[in-house]
Image (cartoon, rainbow, N blue to C red):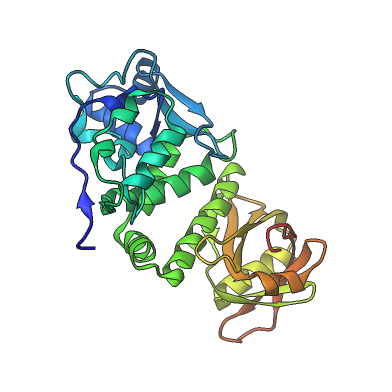
Length: 326
C-alpha cells in the first residue's frame, strides 16, 4: 500500500522495559550461537521462562526482565543485528494497523510505563503503518507451530521444535502465508491451516515415539455417522492392512475451527500403529456438513482410493467436539 508509513525505530529502549519479551525457540538458538553460548547457558543466564502471558492459551517462551530493562540494552540494543523476532516486528504487529490502533494495544497490554514513550506515540493516529512483511510471515508460522507444540506441557524437546521450525519455514509455505496475509486469500489460509493441523497430528505421533507417516488426502465427503477421506491407492492399502491386521493401537482425533474461513473446520487424526510408525492426516469440511455427520461427536472415518481402484477401506472411530462445529 502506497500510503503506508514505515516505522523507524529510534532505539530509545522504552519498549525494552517490559517485564516479559516473547521469544521463539529459533530466537534462542540463534542468539545463543551469536553470543557463543550453549542454549542451556543462554536460558539460565538470561532468565528465559516458560509461561502463559498476553492471553495465550498455550505457554510460550519469554525473556524475563529482572532489572530496569532488557539485559541486551545498553545505550541501544546490543543484539540489534540478531534481535528476537518480536522486537523486529514491534510495534506494528499486523497489516493495515493505524498508529491509533497500535497505541491502544500498547496502552491495553503494557506492563510498564516505559513502553508508552515509544516513538509511535508521536505519530498521528490516522497514519497507516507498514508492517515488516517477511518478519510477520515468519512470526505467523513460528507462533502457529509453537502454540501447537507447547499446548502439551510434557513437550520440552527444544532441539526438536527448533528443527521443526526451520523445516516448515520454507519458500512454498511462506508464499502461501504471504498470499493469505496480504492478499486476503481464503484458499491459501485453508491450505496453511491444514498444514498446521497435520503438524498437530504429527506431534501426537512423536509423543508416542513413532515415526510420522503422512496420509495425503484429496478431500472428504460426509454422511450421517461416517466421513470418507479420499487418499492414494497406496495409502488406502496401508490403512486397510493396518486396520484389518490388528496393527492399530490407538486413534487420536481433534476438531479445530478454521480462522481463514469461519464456516469451515478441520479434523486432525493421529493413528498409533504397532512397530515404529504412526500415521497422521488432516482434512477440512464445512461445519454444516460436519454437523450432519454426528450429534454426539462420534463418527466412523473411512478411506477410499482417489482413483477408485479399490472399494472403500478402513474403519476408524473418531471424535469431533460438537462445540467446535456449531
